[in-house]
Length: 317
Image 1: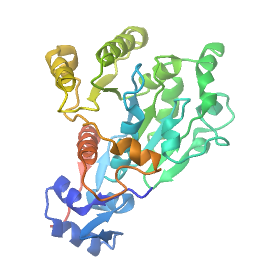
Image 2: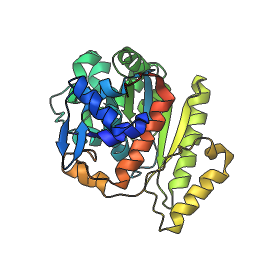
Image 3: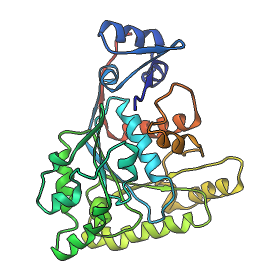
Image 4: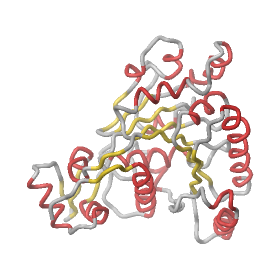
């Protein structure tokens, strides 16, 4: 993978001229490349161009209903955040290991979260480097017995994964947790370690009931039990303006007070770019062609940045 931030995109974000970006790249001797008159750069240059400082935060991606595009979205968003200069760690908790595979990591002989709970490894020994700005604690089928570990050893659900995350926040701007599609002890522990829980939702027949069940389970069996209420955000995915179901789903979300205040301003339009990129071991940001997928994920990343940003440096015009 070789994801790219276009100089034009950086200029838009910083609300400055394109020549000002070019000037900074050259005057600071930062890496950049050019392809068909498009100038682009990577994570290391982005750190100097954007000069953003973040409050370290943890975001869990969770939905009890599978097939909502959770891994595609979290993967693309993590990549995009790294292109704004943020340092990201993903903890893959799903035994299907889709995020791990999207990163091109072979986890067969790598330590994973269950190995930490077995006291075989420290968290730093379980981190695999993916690309500049993005690391991962991978997963594999062995994580399927995480819940048994919680039960047999009577592990404190509200503290196990939180301890892991808290030990990592000094090294990363964002910690993403890719949860399995169930609210078990593992997912509950991840939720309680989070600053925000993102619930992806697609406009399909049973998606709204899945959202309702997910929120009810979180509030009833997690937040109330442990007396800790975590911010939750709804992310509408696979929106297709040509279908009435997409519009009906969006209207329903906006009409309900319990949902309206939780929805991201950004919604993700349906796009084959997400699965196509992962199938080719790439991200949607590996090429410089414009696309709706890139536009939408960029807007989502900016929403997340604005919620966590402490300062932004001033760039010379």
